[in-house]
Length: 271
Length: 294
Image (tube, rainbow over all chains, first blue to last red; front, side, top):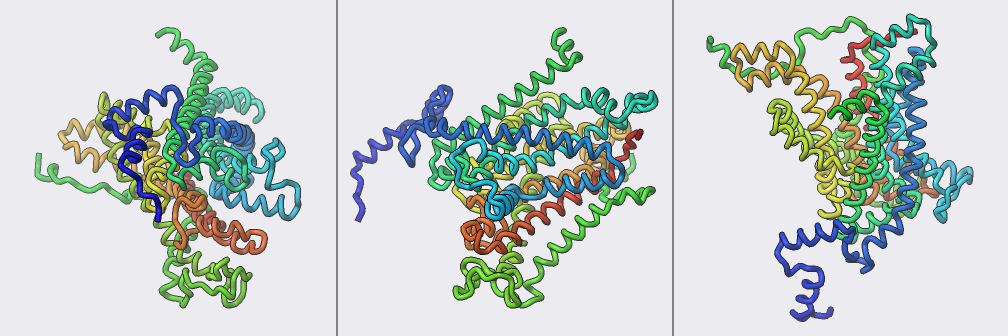
């Protein structure tokens, strides 16, 4: 038989978690503490939530950032090649893009592990979080995101190629590379920067899947454990922090777009 | 006005004449996607026609066996037939994706249409509310919703719907906004057509083709997200057959029984691919632009 808790014990626990206060007051208290990045202690481990997250956050950020760099490289290559290539090569590249978007990252990860870890032995699965262990998870995460962004790069380039200024450039006898870098790239850089910042949010979420497969010691492990144990303070802190990081990257991208676009900069100066 | 004007007609679903001037615009991809979708539909009906073992039927003596005549795709760690589970998962996996998509549309369609047509302060408030949800990465928000509801297939459907609808509402609003600023819509409005008539007869038919593209592509991403959640063990729970969950169960046996790994992953990939191909195919069908070539 378990221990039957005395009413005083229950009252003490309720007081410890602040459950004896009114709902609105509890929310106000939570909000005030959240503003100071205090999310209380984990129900499961009893340690401060922020300490747990600080332990795992760098690994997730490193994974998401390196995957973003990979995704940008992949998207630019796939998108611009598909836009410039001939009819059949272009169709083939677009087919490859759609295929890459459709492959689930968890399956891709398992296949990569099977090939590179079990068959070829080039990488190891149980790593110590060093940079070489980051390669396979980062590739997994960046392939799908890179393909999705590549589709967007292709769409943007195609839209620009239907414009008159590109027609003029062609008429002046400029080569494809010159038109791409000199005429199309400056016009699509802004929207693409915003899309890349948005993709970072997707990578933060996708990191959960990849981390759980590769055993990468990031936030993914923490949040999956928290969901299984209904550890609400950890889930709350995770949601708020991921939102903040996503918000910060989007803001940085927007500022970069405004600062790099003379027209937007002038309009901002007038106001 | 005659009584013809007071009649509220439904939206015209099929355009009066489909212009198919250039047969090259019908891409192979679109056809392939439709064939794949039809294939999955037939696969879901397979248990009625063929005599398959039940997806939950265990044969503990035949655990982790490779493909054979009795079990074309082999058996899993409990001796269950992988093919039977794969087919049993079709209505679960695709059904979950369609249910999530229906929930997303049920919120985003009215939300986007009202915001787009109302404009002004209503539009601003509705879109800022959607923006608040969009401030979180989609999968992260879905994880949080599941975390608060407890892991189940229903929770993952709700979580995905809650995280995916704002971006959809935004797209619908953009479509409605550009459609409602066309001259003939204004003309209909000035001619005294009722608000509902303008929406159903003049705005929605313009939006429908683009909406079909969005729905198809979004279903692909929702399907991917739901099977990922099941793979993480916080979507469909065992013993429910679901492709992502099957892969999750296969993980510990992955060196001994690679066959458990190949088939469910291929099923997810092909299903997502089908929706993506159909969406992309429709998009290029609707694309009237002609890029200049050098």
